[in-house]
Length: 355
Image (cartoon, rainbow, N blue to C red; front, side):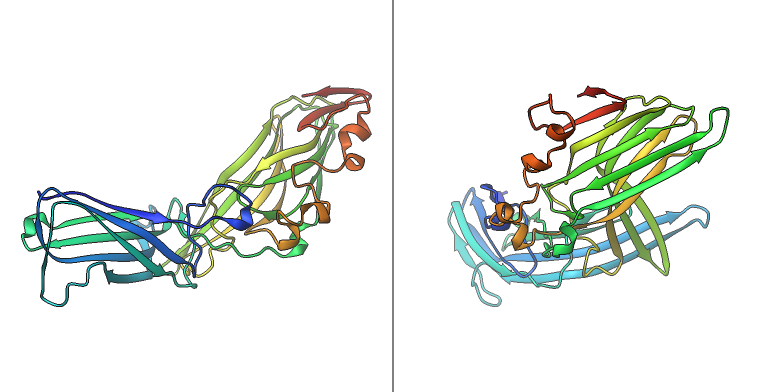
């Protein structure tokens, strides 16, 4: 085998709007892809062609066990090929042994969906290079996946606080209510950022509260042959397993829920066989009873300029995970607790259990 190595290396641009010193490892629809193909030959080889292909597909498949059949669907979102060597039709050239490198550029279409990987379907992108040798035994193909993520600008109204509350009456030997109140700082879920949570839970039932949980949930919808299947999964969560007894409460202040870095945009725009949405969920689990749950939609994209790195001080939002000193509940409600921190606290009259 004369071909020792055939590698594809992608070059990415700095992610300016994410305010990071690291290069991002994905492309945005409409951007120009750049990279290098490295071909290492052990000996001289007669080459008939060197071509790079760009492929993007969406596929869905699931088995309906009660009907003993499989529903399937697919879409092609990207299909393009370009030569890396200008050899001409039905011609060939000699390449000497050693390392040969070929740069490439390709303008991505603006109407392609984000990369997505779900239990019943996926959207994938692939670059494939083929070295077509005159001696067909030496013909070599290699491939490398790349990631595409749409990053729509999030509207300003998503940066308002979102308040949720719910109460439930439980009847039994010790009847009473569980009351749940939760506030998140915004419904804008920017990958790599945090959702900031305040919560108040009071227990007036005869049962213990065994779990308080905040989570970021992905709800995926898959469509094929006129049918639909839905799947929910946790992307990020914070658990509080402190037992809350009768006539006790639990308070969360400035608890951070991280947003994972490589999330596709809300809706999975431009894909017709898969759609997705994100939810914030705050759940209280009562021993032997149904969970008390509040939810609200979240939207994934990039920061609005007013709320980006250059606008943080001007807008006065809680960018580092904490509010200003005047609004800091740790100093207002607990004056003896001097520092700002991420913490939860137990509420029981005047007794506070700081964590």
